[in-house]
Amino acid sequence: MVGRNVVCNSPPVPPYQLNYPSIAILSLDRPVSVRRTVTFVASRNGPKVYGASIEPPEGVDVTVEPQVLDFSHGDENLSYTVHFTPLRVAPGYAYTFGSITWSDENQHLLEVPLLLELSNIVRLVSFSLVRVD
Image 1 (cartoon, rainbow, N blue to C red):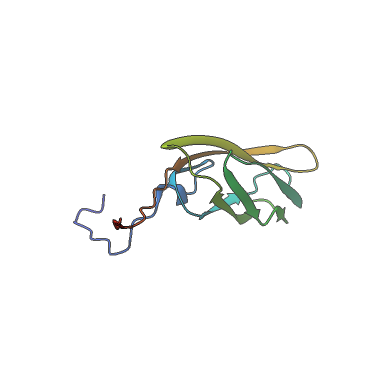
Image 2: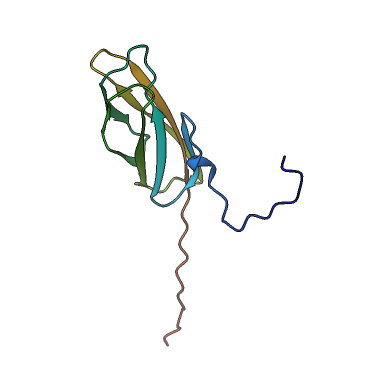
Protein backbone atom coordinates (compact mmCIF):
# COMPACT_ATOMS: atom_id res chain seq x y z
CA MET A 1 0.00 0.00 0.00
CA VAL A 2 2.78 2.46 0.87
CA GLY A 3 5.38 1.00 -1.52
CA ARG A 4 7.90 0.10 1.18
CA ASN A 5 8.31 -2.18 4.19
CA VAL A 6 6.79 -0.81 7.37
CA VAL A 7 7.74 -1.86 10.89
CA CYS A 8 5.18 -1.21 13.60
CA ASN A 9 6.63 -1.02 17.10
CA SER A 10 3.26 -0.69 18.79
CA PRO A 11 1.41 -3.76 20.03
CA PRO A 12 -1.41 -4.79 17.68
CA VAL A 13 -4.88 -3.45 18.33
CA PRO A 14 -7.28 -6.20 19.44
CA PRO A 15 -10.00 -6.76 16.80
CA TYR A 16 -12.75 -5.90 19.31
CA GLN A 17 -11.34 -2.34 19.53
CA LEU A 18 -12.02 -1.65 15.84
CA ASN A 19 -14.92 0.80 15.56
CA TYR A 20 -17.47 -1.63 14.07
CA PRO A 21 -21.23 -1.43 14.78
CA SER A 22 -21.09 -4.78 16.61
CA ILE A 23 -18.83 -6.06 19.39
CA ALA A 24 -17.28 -9.53 19.38
CA ILE A 25 -14.76 -10.65 22.00
CA LEU A 26 -13.13 -14.07 21.90
CA SER A 27 -11.70 -15.76 25.01
CA LEU A 28 -13.23 -13.35 27.53
CA ASP A 29 -11.53 -14.42 30.76
CA ARG A 30 -11.04 -11.04 32.45
CA PRO A 31 -12.73 -7.61 32.44
CA VAL A 32 -12.48 -5.83 29.08
CA SER A 33 -13.52 -2.30 28.06
CA VAL A 34 -14.42 -1.42 24.47
CA ARG A 35 -14.76 2.11 23.10
CA ARG A 36 -17.02 3.08 20.21
CA THR A 37 -17.51 6.40 18.41
CA VAL A 38 -20.80 7.18 16.66
CA THR A 39 -21.88 10.01 14.37
CA PHE A 40 -25.29 11.65 14.52
CA VAL A 41 -26.62 11.72 10.95
CA ALA A 42 -30.00 13.34 10.50
CA SER A 43 -31.97 15.13 7.80
CA ARG A 44 -32.67 17.85 10.35
CA ASN A 45 -29.86 19.23 12.45
CA GLY A 46 -30.78 19.72 16.04
CA PRO A 47 -30.47 18.20 19.45
CA LYS A 48 -31.15 14.50 19.94
CA VAL A 49 -30.75 12.42 23.05
CA TYR A 50 -30.25 8.65 22.85
CA GLY A 51 -30.42 6.40 25.91
CA ALA A 52 -28.84 2.96 26.21
CA SER A 53 -30.67 -0.19 27.25
CA ILE A 54 -28.68 -3.38 27.77
CA GLU A 55 -29.65 -6.98 27.12
CA PRO A 56 -26.59 -8.58 28.74
CA PRO A 57 -25.16 -11.84 27.48
CA GLU A 58 -25.64 -14.70 29.94
CA GLY A 59 -22.77 -14.91 32.43
CA VAL A 60 -21.42 -11.42 31.75
CA ASP A 61 -21.96 -8.09 33.50
CA VAL A 62 -22.23 -5.25 30.95
CA THR A 63 -22.21 -1.53 31.69
CA VAL A 64 -22.18 1.45 29.32
CA GLU A 65 -20.63 4.87 30.00
CA PRO A 66 -22.19 7.29 29.45
CA GLN A 67 -25.69 5.82 29.37
CA VAL A 68 -26.97 8.84 27.45
CA LEU A 69 -25.59 10.33 24.23
CA ASP A 70 -26.66 13.97 23.87
CA PHE A 71 -26.08 15.18 20.31
CA SER A 72 -26.35 18.95 19.87
CA HIS A 73 -26.09 19.08 16.04
CA GLY A 74 -25.83 16.94 12.91
CA ASP A 75 -22.53 15.24 12.04
CA GLU A 76 -21.44 15.36 15.69
CA ASN A 77 -19.24 12.49 16.94
CA LEU A 78 -19.69 11.11 20.45
CA SER A 79 -18.01 8.15 22.13
CA TYR A 80 -19.13 5.59 24.65
CA THR A 81 -17.37 2.77 26.48
CA VAL A 82 -18.77 -0.69 27.15
CA HIS A 83 -17.36 -2.61 30.13
CA PHE A 84 -17.59 -6.43 30.11
CA THR A 85 -16.95 -8.52 33.24
CA PRO A 86 -17.28 -12.32 33.07
CA LEU A 87 -19.32 -13.61 36.03
CA ARG A 88 -18.73 -17.32 35.66
CA VAL A 89 -16.38 -19.80 34.13
CA ALA A 90 -17.77 -21.62 31.13
CA PRO A 91 -17.18 -25.35 30.69
CA GLY A 92 -14.68 -25.32 27.83
CA TYR A 93 -15.75 -22.43 25.65
CA ALA A 94 -19.25 -21.01 25.55
CA TYR A 95 -20.67 -18.40 23.21
CA THR A 96 -23.15 -15.95 24.64
CA PHE A 97 -25.12 -13.20 22.92
CA GLY A 98 -26.69 -9.90 23.91
CA SER A 99 -27.22 -6.37 22.69
CA ILE A 100 -27.12 -2.69 23.50
CA THR A 101 -29.96 -0.64 22.04
CA TRP A 102 -29.71 3.14 21.72
CA SER A 103 -33.09 4.87 21.33
CA ASP A 104 -34.44 8.42 21.27
CA GLU A 105 -37.81 9.80 22.31
CA ASN A 106 -39.12 9.30 18.74
CA GLN A 107 -38.36 5.57 18.83
CA HIS A 108 -35.39 5.60 16.47
CA LEU A 109 -33.38 2.51 17.39
CA LEU A 110 -29.76 1.55 16.89
CA GLU A 111 -28.89 -1.97 18.00
CA VAL A 112 -25.32 -3.02 18.80
CA PRO A 113 -25.10 -6.84 18.71
CA LEU A 114 -22.79 -8.47 21.27
CA LEU A 115 -21.04 -11.82 20.80
CA LEU A 116 -18.78 -13.03 23.58
CA GLU A 117 -16.84 -16.24 23.97
CA LEU A 118 -16.31 -17.10 27.62
CA SER A 119 -13.11 -19.05 28.04
CA ASN A 120 -12.51 -21.75 30.60
CA ILE A 121 -10.19 -20.49 33.32
CA VAL A 122 -8.13 -23.28 34.80
CA ARG A 123 -6.09 -22.53 37.89
CA LEU A 124 -3.44 -25.05 38.89
CA VAL A 125 -2.84 -25.45 42.58
CA SER A 126 0.47 -26.86 43.73
CA PHE A 127 0.38 -29.36 46.58
CA SER A 128 2.34 -32.30 47.87
CA LEU A 129 1.32 -35.54 49.56
CA VAL A 130 3.10 -36.64 52.69
CA ARG A 131 2.73 -40.18 53.96
CA VAL A 132 2.12 -40.40 57.69
CA ASP A 133 2.82 -43.77 59.34
